[in-house]
Image 1 (spheres, rainbow, N blue to C red):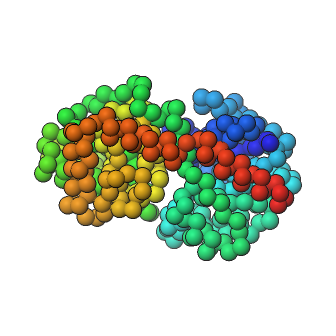
Image 2 (cartoon, rainbow, N blue to C red):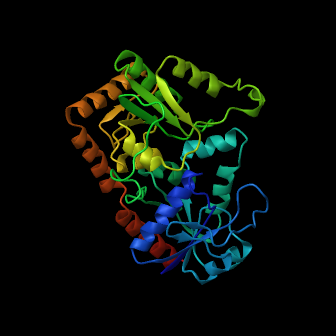
Length: 357
């Protein structure tokens, strides 16, 4: 079986890229012949740009015409008209959470939901998939009669693992808590868990520090060449002044090293976001939102006392038996997010698409 994925080549820049390439690696583990095409950058209409020969580890992008020899095509980005004109079955992953997809359009940013409506009505698409079991009902309700597959969320367990190089924090504490989630202003941000972790530091463990990676840039209207007068800067400066937050950085390319070095990661997510998958795979214990089934340490992010207590419970377990806590985190990732399981699920999707061509 020959499969081609169309995506925007963006290592370390977008979670959708990391997930798409994890799917590619999972499919290759099942013996499938899988190519990757960079197509469309999301900005320059009509998005016909393609970069050939881009390399990211074992992935090298090929020219769009290679896709015309495929049995199945997976769309993560734009597609050339020649693909739509062919009879090759198309498969589309729903990369965003339903509420986020709704809010992107409701706030006037992008017509993401409209694009999904158009695509699900197009008979060229033979199968759709989500990587969060919790969202299957939402999509089935929105797109009645369409086949929505659940594929387990993937993570590269070879890259994100407890061994290997570790990061050296620039302003370390005796306990280092990491926040590395995406700040999606239309949907959800780590704002609450940032303060919950800071509360834990102030009230329970003053020698600890919170480190924030993936810090968003403030809106341009609040910044100039002389000063940054925006809310992100004000918030982090206040927490740094209170000696609760240490290092703050924008996009980084070595999250695996950071998670290995961290004692705890915190997230506001209930589903298996990339933060959840990558932290656990790296053996980093995780404190997450209530309902997150991948960690024993959970609480409502809007309840500072409860969430700080969940961090404290994780901290106490680490102090009792750090190695066991880290092993349990890694084992959960191996069980839930392994590429063998993911690849088999993707193969079933492709077989369905080909059978219903």
